[in-house]
Length: 237
Image (tube, rainbow, N blue to C red; front, side, top):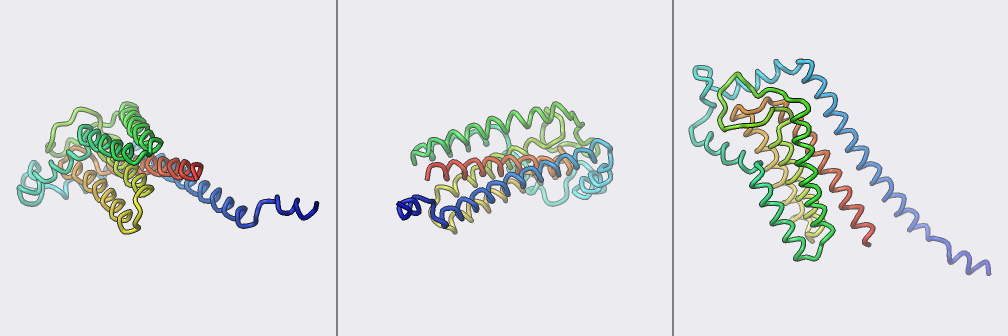
């Protein structure tokens, strides 16, 4: 009787795995909370005007001192920046999400596909809400390289590219088999996010702190979605 009772008890290795699982989940949520805290601190500095000097120095450093309408570098670099910045626009991001959702549906990962849609929709709503709340004016030191319609803080291109590309990269690593392939996907996601944000400052349509804030919020959102995906995968197992 006592022997059968002992056999029914959970095995120690199961308990250790459960402990690691809970610790990892708590660590991921704490990391998201820490990133949100950094965004709050930066927002306070921006609203108080303490970042004005930093913003102006970076923005002017990317312009020809003799002609502020001319970004530094050859003409092809400005055209390239315009092409790169379009990768963070709503049409391209929507198309990218649609392609990835189709890919996940082919793999029969319906929950992951739904998570992509919820992540993209929720991220878009959050981006426009923050812009409407802060209503920071666009840079007026230099002419804008592309046409803009919304307020400046935080940068929706930087935020949405981080939200979409980093989230998609994290989700795809859940279904890709090889480590080097997963690493490649994440590196490409990070590079795309960084280049899009930098292009916004280079084209003069955002203050540097707009882009930094967009990266912070987008990274927090992507990390949260990746944590949810990991939790869903654990439950499925």
